[in-house]
Length: 190
Image 1 (spheres, rainbow, N blue to C red):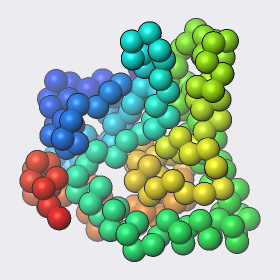
Image 2 (spheres, rainbow, N blue to C red):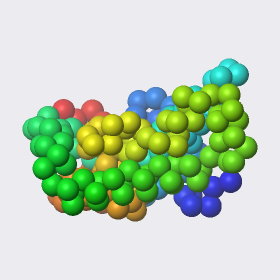
Image 3 (cartoon, one colour):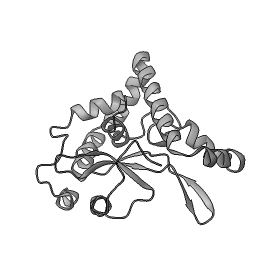
């Protein structure tokens, strides 16, 4: 089912629970690990059943590393999301590159969902189908904006061509992992 990303081990699941403080739904694989071997970016299954109703979770790549999440949150609180939105409105080349990033992300998300599931959604759940097919990085519907820097960094760390994610990565001094190697301690940091 998943040949693109390593399937999570039991230890990966426990680490991600520790990183997030809860169990993730649809944890499909690990897209990137830190220097200590812990998941930094996980891959989520875009469609899951809750009861008999399908749900679409359009965030394919999820930044789970507490250290990276904390540093990216600081960038966001400094106003960088609004700055990027302004840049996208003013720079046609950047906007085109970002559109390509959204399309790449959506294509990767579609590739994870079996054709039979896509057909079922198209027939019976048109709204869910549109989200799956058309939304961009992190499930953003207005692809002329920026949802959050976390999703863009996760896309970049998973190998995606994402100018916002690339810039975000350049702002982080130790992209390959925290100084401590202890996810639980990093999650508790202010």
